[in-house]
Amino acid sequence: MTTMKIMSQLKISAVCYLNTIPFVYGLQQSGLLKNFRLDLDIPSICAKKLQSEEVDISLVPVGAFTDFTQYHLISDYCIGAVGEVKTVLLLSKVPLDKIRKISLDFDSRTSVRLIKVLGEHYWHISPEWENLSSDRLMKSYIPESVVAIGDKTFTLRGHYPYIYDLAEVWINFTSLPFVFAAWISKKKMPASILAPFTEALSYGVDHKKESIEFFKDKLPQDVDCLDYLEKNISYLLDIQKRQGLELFLSYLK
Image 1 (cartoon, rainbow, N blue to C red):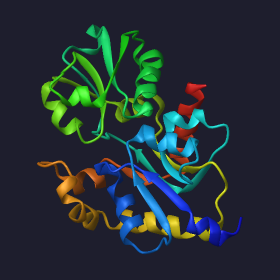
Image 2: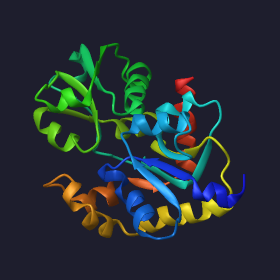
Image 3: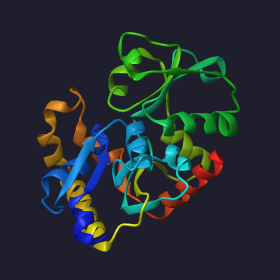
Image 4: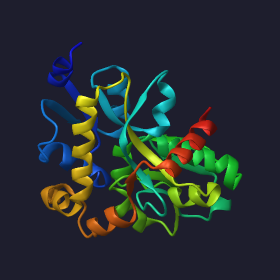
């Protein structure tokens, strides 16, 4: 398959949460990547579309990496955290040692698998796990304890006195940063695609303020979005994040 043919068919899947809008902005607005289609999906769909080869590149939750027999990390960018992330939380009405059941927001398998790793290996708790759809969570159902992700956490956290930031807990446990999602492909991509793709991501990360302004109508209100992107999300997939990613995947095996 020629590079031109690949370029004419390049399909990308990504999430459009607050923490990913610099990526989306860079891909859509930088003009650096040509002849592509960008689908905006929830995290679980990003993984499914790549697995079924509906797309060529996807921002996949790392908890779904184990579904792939082979994959390639694309670019040196990710959705990561080197401290408190604020939007991947265990929310509870009771202290940790009193939790009996945890409801799981299945928008992202990464948070589901992370809470189970932390529960078993760090907190040493064995709660009952309840699968919960995001729609039900947002329709006034407030469970006693819930793992929630994404922009909805800004609203939900007001209902709970006990809040555990899962990135922060992972870092306390391992002394390594956490990677929530990374760009991967099933097939190796040529440099003619990788270079402009990476440049577009870099452009978006370098223009966070502009990305917020562009998507302001879709972002949570009463949140300092730029402060969140600058302080809570770490986009560079550096050596330490790769080490944290490998450690997390080793727990999943």
